[in-house]
Amino acid sequence: NQVKLKSFLNIFSYLLFPLWIFLFIVFYIKYDNEYKPQFTGKYYRDIPSKITPAEVSHLMSFGKIKSRDVTATLLDLTRKGYLKLEAVSVIRKKLFSNKEIPTFRFTKIDTVSTKTLKDHEKKLVSWFIDKIGDGTSVTLKAIEEEAKNRSRALTFKSDYDTFIRKAKKEASTNSYLDEKSSLKGKIIGSLTATMFFLWGILIGMIYLELPEHLLLSLLG
Image (cartoon, rainbow, N blue to C red; front, side, top):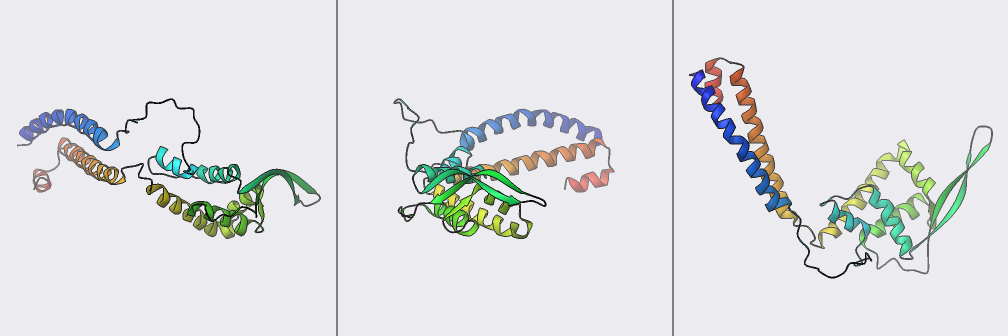
């Protein structure tokens, strides 16, 4: 019986390989293929709209927002005139002397209202300027030191997660990604991969010549 079973599994395994390739192509076309733009005019690489760097990253990274988008958002707020960026030096006390460290300082411009900012942008301003800074400005050095501070690491991570969550929520309203279809594709792909994985384990167990009663119990 095992000889016949091995012969059947060999034939079936050869058939599974082209089936796997076929399913991969189908899943890619249906769930992961990029939309072709309908815009045919000249593109001059200017800023296309008022979406933020985090929202662009959400689109380009297929629903993900990364740590680099925090810095990009900070610089974008400077570009839009909500913050002022300047090169400064900070003094850090050492054991026998003081050390001057070059860095950059972001200063909130009081004459510009932040009411028009999006929620994740407001979060970044309150997090960096009000919480880490002095309510008026903050240096990159202070942000770096806050991120490395073990006693406040959980608070820093919580603020970071809040920024990411708000940015994802606002990016989702743009409807740039078909997130429902993407989730469906991930579920189907995971189930298919699991099926092939289990099939591989079964074949391996059979070729290890496990006892017949155990094989029959595995096959139902």
